[in-house]
Each structure stands twice: as structure tokens, then as C-alpha cells.
Image 1 (spheres, one colour):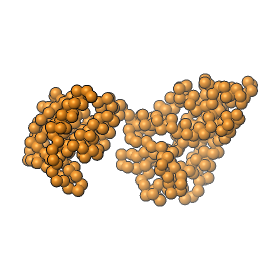
Image 2 (image 1 turned 30 degrees about the vertical axis):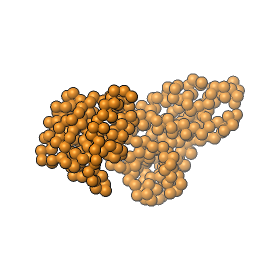
Image 3 (image 1 turned 90 degrees about the horizontal axis):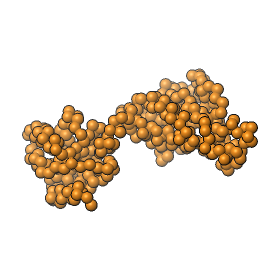
Image 4 (image 1 turned 90 degrees about the vertical axis):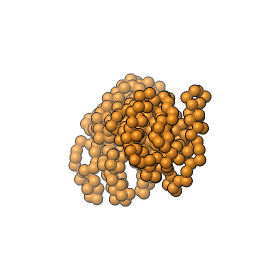
Length: 358
């Protein structure tokens, strides 16, 4: 155990005492706690300091004098944050200890803060991206990142409203061999399936069930480049027993649904011949109604707000002759889905080509 951990143990031991009787909801439901939380958020937003944490015992929270609390906290932090990023205070808002903590990653920081809070302590963590607080071993709030490096990475990410720009960045990444090679069969497999005269034409042969690889690759890119929590809805089953490929929320809690499809030729499960293939008609007749149906089910049956339902199509055809959905004529869509068309959006096809087979 290093010296920082030893120091944390000393703080926990020195401050651990019998916690005052709390309400059923916990100390974080008290007016004093809420006032302290509001003051800290306001302070952080005005000062834009480096990330910092403030620790106070649950007992001290119950004994805090509310008069002049904002001024006391402001003066305390203005002074102590010049030297420390982790401050321990008492019921009089006086600093009893200070540390400079550097965590390896946010997960470790959250574990340590949560452990501290099991010993009668309330831990507030604040940064540019919000606040978290830890009480009785539980964490609350929205600042999921607890290290400067993670916070800086998060800040660089784009907002969900910029998803079209992110998709264009992803489109460029699909031309990199490290990306497109995930989708196609190996060169040795191509030699078994095609004679030399047809090998160049058939080099875009996709692996079996490529939709899983396409979805996972897109999901990883979205998570890395857009703020928010993108989820592969494997466990989320609609009443129709269908699943969204990928979904997230916007800032107002409205759903954003992303369905992933592909056109081209995939290999048979036995890897010895061609398997399933899809063309533009599949997108028009199957994929578009499917996304519209998801939007309908989310709104009508599940009572969710939906901001958009996106269709992402990977075009792995060896000869590409236009977008898979080159019309805005939706006469082929059932009448009860027409009202949801304004929420439907399709990105131009994402071209994938096996430029240099592995």
C-alpha cells in the first residue's frame, strides 16, 4: 500500500465516529446536505477549478450552521484549493486536512470514494462535467469521470446533436485497413472459394453474420466520440420481442434509435461457399419499415419520447451503383407508419471495401 492510501486510511480512521440518526432516505436528503451540494455546484461552475473533492462526516452535516454557509465554503475553497485538490472539513467549515490525490483512472477513484463513504463520511467530487457524491457506499450524480485525463477526453467528445459529423468521421475511418479488415474473410479463404479469375471481383466477401461486427464497430466509435451512453440493446427486448441495435438518450431524455444493416455478399457458416446476400430492395422493403415500426412501438406502446430513428447501411458490394435508398417515396410503407416518417433518418451508405485483403 502506498503513502497516499495510508494517508486516506488515517483520514477515515480519525473521522470515523458514530453517525447521527438519519431519515429513512439518508443524510443526502437533508436540507443541510442539499444546501452544501448546491453551493459546491455553484462554486465549481463559477471558478472552473481543476477537479476537486470535499469530505465531511455525516454527523457534521447535521451540525452545520446554515447562516453564511455559502461565504464560508467559498472562502475555504479559494484558500485550500491553491494547495490541495482533496479537502476535509468539519461542521464549522474549517479545513482539518488536505491532500493532492492523483488517481490512475476514474474507476479506482470512485471505488476509493465509495469505500470512504461507508465510514460515516460524505464525499463530494466536482469537475467541469458535473458532480458526484458518495454516501453509505453509494454514488450519485452525473460526473462519471474522476481524473483530469478522463475529463479532458470527455470534453473533447461531441454532443449527440453532432452525430452526422461523427458518422462522417467514421466514414473516413472505414478506409483504414485496421478497420475494414474486421469485416471481410481472409485471403486464404477467398482462394478456396473463388478461382483466380474471380478472386478480385469476390474480395469483398463478408464474414458470416457481419451485422454483429458492423454494429459493434460503430458502437465503439460512437462511444469514443460522442458524449452520452450508447448501448447495444441485447438485454432490452420490446413487447414485439424485437431489439434496438443501438440506442441512447438526448439531453431531454428522448430516445435516439440506431438500426444497422448491410448490403453485399457474406460467407456461408461453413466458410466454404457464399452465403446470405442482401441488395437495396432489402433496405427499402425491410429495413425502413423496421425502423419506423420501432419508432411507433417506442412512442405508442412504451410511451417514450423519440428524437430520431436512424438507419445506418454498410455497402459492401463490389460494384456500388448508388445509395441503397435513393428515393424519398414511402408509398411502400404501411399507412399507420407514415406519421413517424419525420423522425426517420438514413445516413448515406457507408462504403466498405476490402482494398488489401489480409
